[in-house]
Length: 83
Image (tube, rainbow, N blue to C red; front, top):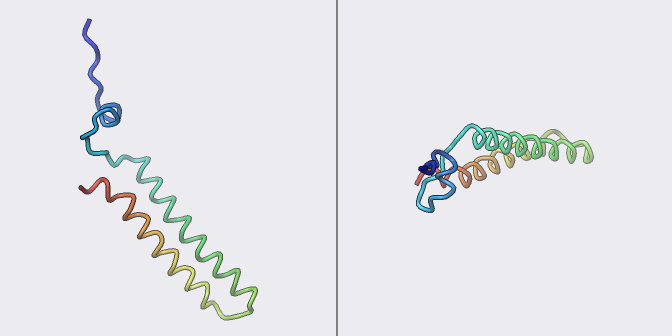
């Protein structure tokens, strides 16, 4: 009897030289990470704006920080798939 040859993800996990594949679950994780960064940054900014009674400057600053965190996190996550 011949052993089955692993393919796809099983092969990539066992082959140390194999390049990881970017599948739907990785993309969903990256999208969820970006959404969390945006909502957390904007939410914290809005919370501090409400506490200080200021104009929504900190909400916009939190949104900007969330965007930056999302871009940086996305870069670190997809960097392994690009090389």
